[in-house]
Image (cartoon, rainbow, N blue to C red; front, side):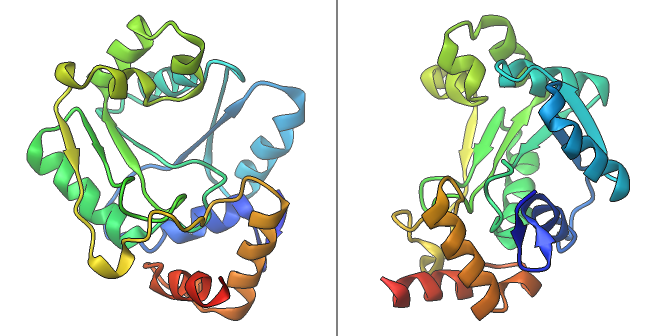
Length: 206
């Protein structure tokens, strides 16, 4: 709920998704904790679907949300990543659907916080059933990453101009947040589907 420019962090993420050329239903999947009531209120005000599940078992929360909405495929974006590259997200969705993958992602090449993941419902179901270690429950993709032979995986190749995996465009701490605010104030990235301008800003600020 902290502000990033004229929107909240979550609001900015939802706004960026409006640039997508693909059709999908957006669900904010938060916890049942009282402190997250504010998230549900925000979703109600912004007419966004909200699903509430376990705080600690995030994998189960994803699975139950997907089951509730009868999803066949699930795009995973996390709420600390306000600069998802929507151009690459659209390309990732195309890759996932065309390849028939169980799991698709664009994480290794893009800056931290810019990429995305897509799961088939079946892959998510297997992960939920068999992923019993604490890190499996906290991170939705861990079981799949640890068992690559069991899941067909597709990885998106991204343009050279966006290949800066060492750059951080996520918001995990105060320094990240201050940088994100500066990007919003000093660039036009809020009105763009890509993140080239944000990358240039970070490179020139190092």
